[in-house]
Length: 272
Image 1 (cartoon, rainbow, N blue to C red):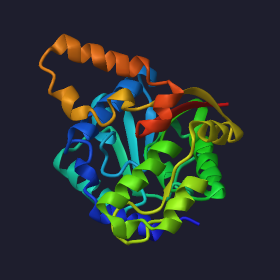
Image 2: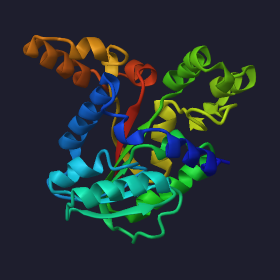
Image 3: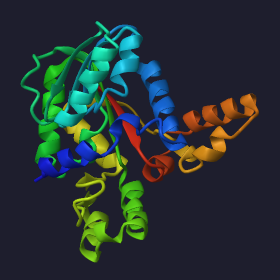
């Protein structure tokens, strides 16, 4: 079972509020995610940002006129979100709540047009937990509602654990390295760094959502072939060339090879 205390403690320390602005990899992830949202979101919607941390997407979407509900497992992150909201009030941000993604009982049936699931699937180790999460997402979505779910693909995640060993050998041993390659589950052997993680293939993600009554709209890599080339990308001075590369990143983002190997990916589905 997922140790939610370990996950919560990690995010109490990790600077999630600035993760997507501290470096170019985060910048590209944010910009490409917003591009996906702009492409598929309806013109107006009530949105649950589940696992939304300090509201990295909640606040800009509220600025665009969407009615936003922010929810996260971490009391610390929700406190930070409330502090931001007190300094920059926005009537489109309806609530910021401490919520576990497997229990959305504070929300009503068919309350939301859209659920953003940008985080919980990184950590839910057990199939029954993932099913419970998606059952709850299905319940709170309106008819034909959309879910946007990010995940860490199996190869990208597993290979990253080897890179983690080079940088933080106390977090990786032979046992948890073999386990992540065998099952897609990572259990950090230290209490520092990213804790329990789940790395599914894109086919496993599609199957998970399908059996929980969602139709696939798309599965794509978020950073695509620009993954780990972000510093070079943002150093381009030729604006037309930059825009052309971004277009190509977007155009090729549904390539299965890129999905499986290029960092975070996104599933978009509609409620059956």
